[in-house]
Structure formats: structure tokens, C-alpha cells
Length: 83
Length: 250
Image 1 (cartoon, chains in turn cyan, purple):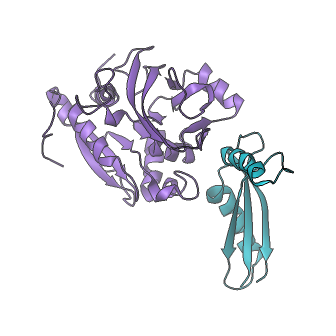
Image 2 (cartoon, helix red, strand yellow):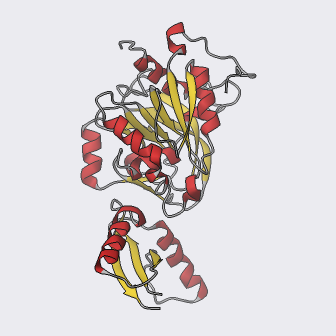
Image 3 (cartoon, helix red, strand yellow):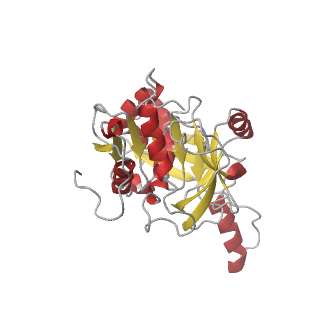
């Protein structure tokens, strides 16, 4: 069954407290190559049947209204993944 | 809901206040609805329980959206509650000519920003921890429906308890809020969550919608509120809106 993947990230200008905590923990485990981390969210919307343009438009709309808050987050990707 | 408070001294209310009805909304995961109901009764009004799935507000004169963890804070704090049937009624009523007074406390504040009744948003505290403390706030605006009984510059102590309490908005929005006097409360002495410009609470342009992270409803009864100060310094929110409802001119 196809899925629509929606990726949401905190806006670049917004401090990401969780990413900041992660970047602090990485070097303690020996992962020293990373200077910054930003943590986002991935949603997988399963579709029963074919993903039409109309369904994809619904997913984009849902991404902007419910899945993300445009004040603090950007929808960075909406794509169809075949199972 | 009809019994009188068993503990503490109920504030004697003028007779005309008794008829004022203030709704308190419960969502799945709301925690502080009962405290809000109690605060309203101690202020002298009648509290009306409202359920998030209700499709009408009835004849309430004001609404409190209390704190808690509606929908477990899943997705984003307040994000799912914002689409509850009753929120559509509240948004309409807040924008109507009658300008229904609406107070959002903590999770209620988060629901109001997700609803776009108030600008900006809350993100995780800058120190990443849940924090619970008695917090001093400064009243910056006493012309809103919920702050009429305070003085500008007055400092009040009420409990604060949250994990996603860091208020943020872009600089343009922050400047506009400051210029229009819509920063209603600021943290004093200590910023508990990294909020921009020490902002603890804001209002909409017409002053009928107010949101804040700290909890005035937990500071309404002597002996049960913060130990510094009177412990009842949150009661003014509820007497303020009552005075507004009964048309007391300031």
C-alpha cells in the first residue's frame, strides 16, 4: 500500500532545544564530526489504493494545517513512497 | 458542582455577580479544569462545565481553557485540541461583536496560539526540563478583560508548571505586541523557560482573549497558594472578568 511521507522541520531561525541537547550528547559517545543537530518529524500517511493528485493535495493541506505549525515549523518534503 | 467550598473562605460576592456564568472547557487530558471551576466559584460566579465535543457554548459570559496535557501533548501541545468542535464556537465568539472573554492557561494558552487567537507559539523550555515553581509576574497591562483588577506594574506570585513553555514569535510580531501593549505579563527575577523578552502572557488586539503559561487558578485560596505573598494573587483574573461581565465601569 502506498504511503505519503511528510517531513516537518523547525524553522531555521528557531532555536531547536532538542537538537541542541543531542549535539551535546554526541561527542560524549565519540561522535565528534557533527557541529549541529536539528530534530524534525516524519509522518507516514497510508493510502488504501492509488495516490491521486487529489489525495496528494489533501496530504499537502493536512501538512500545512495540522501536521505542522507555520509559526515554528516548515513542511520540507511531501512525497509518495510505494510499499 | 453546586456544593460550596469546604476549605477556606469563599469571597463574598455582590449579588449581581452570582448570575455570571463562566464556562470551563475539558479536553481529553485536561488536568486543571476542577481548579479553574473552584477559582470561578471563589470569585463569586457560576462555573459551567463544557466538554470539548460540545457543539454549543450555551449562555456562558466568558470561557476559561485550563491547563493540562490535552491529547497527551501529541503532535504539538494544543495542536489536536485546536480542532475540537467547541473550539470553532469559541473562536467565532471571541471574534464576534460581543467579544467573548477567553482565558487560556498553560495548555490553554498553547491551544489559543494553535487556534491563531493569539500570535506566536510555545516550544520546549530552553533547559529541556519540566519546571514547577512559584513564579513572580509583573502585570504590564490592566486594560484587558482578565486584568482589570490589577495595577500596572503590580507583581503577583502564582505557580508555574510546564515543559513546553518557551514563548516565541518573530521579531516583527514581538515588536508589534510591545507597541500595542499586548504583553500582559512578564516574568520577574527569573525567566523559567527562555521565553522571548520574558513574556509570560499576551492578549489579542481587543483585550478579550488572554493567554499565559503560569497558573492563576492555583493561587486563589489562602493556605493553598504560593507561600510568598498572599497566596491568592491569581484571584484577580476571575474577579476582573466578573466586573467586566456585570458592566462595572473602571
